[in-house]
Length: 408
Image (cartoon, rainbow, N blue to C red; front, side, top):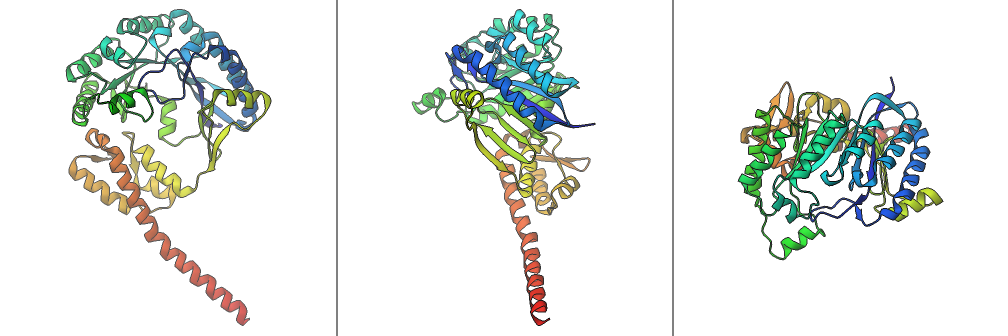
């Protein structure tokens, strides 16, 4: 059995940028789509030999808006992946889509090409909230897209929702969650709105627009966690909920620190002990791949100790959490300082221990950046406490060996 690998394919095109979007996506670039398809396929052919012996068990097509790239182009790209990589028969193949462009012909085309999971950007059931952030669809189109997905025989459907939108309150948030449940998806991703620097929404806030505050967002989050649990959607990550057997296998690769390779401008990879990313520049990517040129903008080998920090940051996003001997075995680092902090979190109701594993509670997830940051500080302090005596001992031994050699 070969080792398992995930593939991410970035489609940087969209019809229009939403006010909150900080992803690398470009409207009004339809004229580059054919060249971009050629570049992606060439890049896939170039990279595949490096993954010989690896089995691809997840493929994720994200964006941007992959559905506006067209079903035929996506089918051609997926066909190239299948020809060049060892893709397992039961691989999870996800495609993101927006409701206004996820029609039946598109969905049938990508389903025939192998897509078996659809991630649909619903965001809200309230048309006024959608309009407030310049989404192109209304809620009626969400329902039509879901119907089309089922007609196309897609049996694994995920809906995205956002809480904290302009003009949103608890009543309208509950309406959106209930509307999403009525559509009976297998998976829900529910994100708190983040105001990213440089986005149109950031400019609106700087000019005085008021969004739901942190306390309101916290209330929305905690209500949602409880409601989805009642409806049979188990929380398995800060923002992700699934019916049994429908967790996102691809996204779990990121959170569990498993290897993946990315294609496209802005795409990231973690493969062969290296982490690298491609420049967020569509034209540079296309030219670099097709005509030759550097397209990587960051490339680094990750030290083992840094992997230990990533273990904390990523695993504590999940309900599975972390475990003492798993940590000691993988990273040869002292768990005691972490356990002291986690016991403190447990007393505050922010963390829980189950079957020797520690994980954050929903209340802890709300504070996860702060809590994980404090754990990283404790990890560093613990590392220094154990490393400095070892280094001193190694220094003394080296000095003694030199002296013995000189005497001899």
